[in-house]
Image (cartoon, helix red, strand yellow):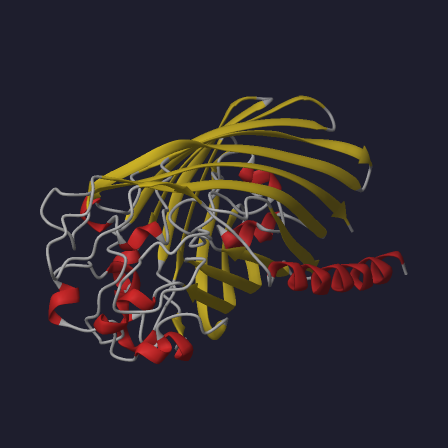
Length: 428
């Protein structure tokens, strides 16, 4: 009866979490999270070769083979600080696209981000899991007419909001002792809104589907496959690959995104090791790559695409993002039973070239470094409190306004982030 009640409570909490996640979710490696699950976040997202939480399928579904029966909940308070600066007066030349000089900060600075995961071990070594988590990060809300134009009635505020929700159902098992594989089928939901982009109407294949159309949504499916092996008592290795997810079109923004409103979710892969350096200290090292170049609406550069095609066309301009490779290092120390201390650091080259700063005023995903720490403390035999803190170091990217006279105006994008997450783990 206790387990039945536990699962009933889990379903209720999962549904509540879905409602919360459907509002705003924000992330840091481009628009992917630095980690998923409180324990993994405390180690800067490293842990593809560890089994720490029922949110593990977001990194490696094979981890569930070593988890047992459990439920993990997380609630994070996230504070992204985004701004852009324009220096240099407009040239006044005809056929240019000037920006108003000054520094503008994005509003909407505090957000609650929930996550939930569960895993069940069945007879015969079968493990079934469910994880609900999200991505975001392409979010800005500038209380200005950022892209002003005498040829179009531009409104304010200016900005975009992208939210992505993932529901991953996982199967995992040990194929031989200490070696496991796992497979997650992933349902993805995303919604998007853009405001204040009327000045680009002359560049759009469908100006009525360019901006200020409230939220549009789309769905799609994908999969993640993973392996986790305990090679030696002190060494484990792990790897996973998530497929590109073909999403239905964001029809109300078919005049903005390339391929008539297409905004697929790029593939990612992660590989890493975990070493038990001492009986109480484990060190993890992961390498992750996010393949933004697979998605035209993300990867296509502004120029020359804006000159050769219209926004919304197959080769319409995008954000110009490059693939992103992230190296993550984490450590877990267990100084006494019932207590685990964690810390981590990650670094990756942010995906925005300096030639692409203009469109990326809307999506300044310029973070490169994260420092994290956290802990887990047993409150009772079947209940554990988890905590993770993340600071994403301030970073800037600068470049010329590509639609003004050469070198006449400079644009600088800047961002830093802070996140604190509390979680609970229930052993069933």
